[in-house]
Image (tube, rainbow, N blue to C red; front, side, top):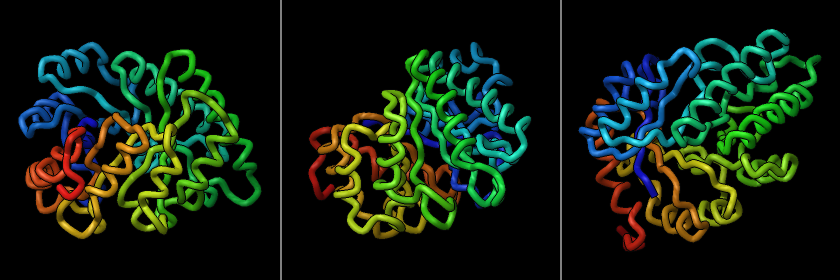
Length: 276
């Protein structure tokens, strides 16, 4: 497994993303902190200079593990199930750009709050029809370009549907696409899953991406989440991808990054002891 760290150009202090600033600065910062991977949270991939981004990643020896699409929802209220057709079209344009960038740089594309909330869509709008149409189009692009979409399972306090691994697996059964996987997050699972190991094993063969944060959403090692058990379950499930730190940046970004890596990096190695 590959340790990765989240980055966004600008966000509020309370947003659980660790590095802040232009990607030309946070990518070297990730390298300096010892992270081989980075997850960039992007509003519009088409607005980025793809060649410059690729060069910066290569120069620093950092892999783009994943693209977070959430800023479209949280900052612009652009999402796949918006009641306005023109906003849904803009959401699809952005997703197409993210998928294109993912294909170029070999990264997973996350679908989290970009899906929208039922409450945002309104009681009269056909939310499920909008979601099906949007996700089917995204999957067509992803399948054609060999990109994995990771649909995030989010706790009930942040999403008004698809809160558990069981519900996520039902979504995968509905679409049956080789490009559609589940994105699991230790913070969300700690709230929603009765038994964490069994939840992870339920998704065996269908896990596309992992976020880690402790039970209090600080860096791993700050509270009581059982990371050795989770990593053992991920290994048993055959997961070999990125493990991205998506936590609060408390007490400061560099401390959060360093302490997380101290806790997580040993668990990413195949021969890590169960109680590490």
